[in-house]
Image 1 (spheres, rainbow, N blue to C red):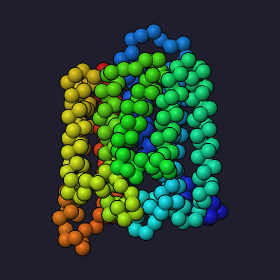
Image 2: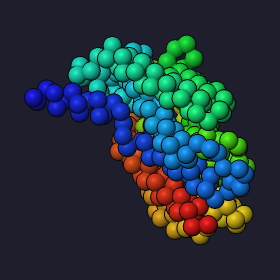
Image 3: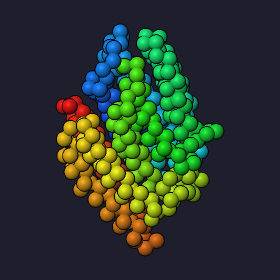
Length: 312
């Protein structure tokens, strides 16, 4: 019984549920945008049914991404030694690589079946291409031979997938059209998810470099990497303010931004403290415990943006 609980806990950790908020926000925004901005003919297929299928597909692909990341980082040895990238589910021996491979096969098959059904139901054949691209991105983030996450392109593809692709794809599934206002709304969302991934890479600048993994932070180096984190969130907030001034959302973006300010200041001060310490006393790995601050900023801004669109 104790071992069973440990195994389930290992699977839970490998799934990394705290990060699914990054999928939920663009999903909800796409649905709200379809309600608020779409003025064309209503599709024959129930919008609730289509959204339910898209919801399952997107969450399944996010889970695929997390499990594939866990598997291939482990096989590459990136999560060994002092690294904090993995959850320890594989290295602890409670889950085997073969088990993760089988779960991935089931999840990808599920997304293929649901997407094929959605394409047949709606007649929107571009949905298949969008889902195929998204699935490939979840797998090849760390899987050979592409492993784009090892070549400083993780943030770029996360921005595309977790911002533009989810929102645009779900909106297209719901309406049969694409939307410029939705594209504008998805820009800060994509940047926020990229910001989460970026901050997660900062504690491992040195360990990733030693393992041969190139991240954007590692390529920039500590000083420039810290400056980019400092700059990124004000750019996101400026985009949110522009959306408000442009009439694409309402005033609730303001309290979301204000609530984030002390969290952002705290992360920046912590980064500066680590970087300014003597080289032999710098504890980059210790930054990992502050990742929740960035996820909290995403949650605050994401919820405020959803609220701001909902009351238009």
